[in-house]
Length: 461
Image (tube, rainbow, N blue to C red):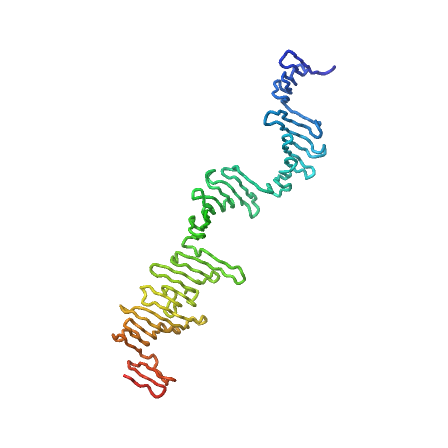
């Protein structure tokens, strides 16, 4: 026979009974069967039942559609029944598949689905679990992923992706408005630190929600690592403070214009601003109509100025209309008859305290009418007066009473040193006609007169 022929050596007495050598003169061994029944291809020392060193190809079906089956037939170890398969599902025109499984228990397959746009699918016992499209999109729980990773169902990430970050989703596009946005989930400062989730724009701003292990496990919301909101285990919420003492506590620096705003978005809705303890008025708690900038109500406390409550307080944008004030009346108006106080109680630094009732015509801010009851002090003497105010004429004392039981009509002062007397002040304008249904007493030039319904005035002193 022409050409080279292989040489087969059978050595019944040797350690390996069969050796097959190439007949090319070099005598290179190509196959060996050991006394233990192990077959070596390309190796003289096989360690398994079949041991191949070099390339291997299997082209014909071994059983049905299966091209290759590698199976552990042992029954004594934990890997019993495990197998590796390579075949074409449903015949040569079906899906090429490779599988890993345990006979009769669980099989996993990786296949190309010819009936679904040649998608690569990973299945468990013939149920698809993961799908990869030709453009690289991966779907878990869905066969039609719409993003690089599309999960339909629950997701859990437990191992670190980078440093102490467990999960990082970032938009790496540079052309759209969401460029650089990212969602993070990780443990700050290592596994013993604060668990955090974050939302941010890379290099611009990041917000974090974390459990602060160093501060009684409080839940904190921060912006660029500055805490903004704190929630305690008992439900108390602090804004600007990490130690709230109420269900809601707001804290800000003294330069802030307001701490709380309430807004009605209806057609005639308004915005109400509530502020307290600002640098400009540290003792004030104010309610302002933010729509027009007017202060609607204010509570004031100060060690030197006393305490008061005012509604419609005097300010640069309004003139003390429809007001109620308790406290330093000079703080809600510029004049006694124009201070717009219904009730006021002055501090010792002022000579008067009392009640003022005013009405002001908003169309004519210079014109107002009203009345007052004042209590005050002159030297060591105390007194009370009653009067009216009209058209910017200040403090008309019509009735006067003092601690000496003196009563004055349009007259104030010491009453000539008397006690228990009635004093009448000079008439501002003497009567020029007879009154109807009675008579009048008046003083003119220090003299007492009486004018009846008829006749002339009669001097009585």
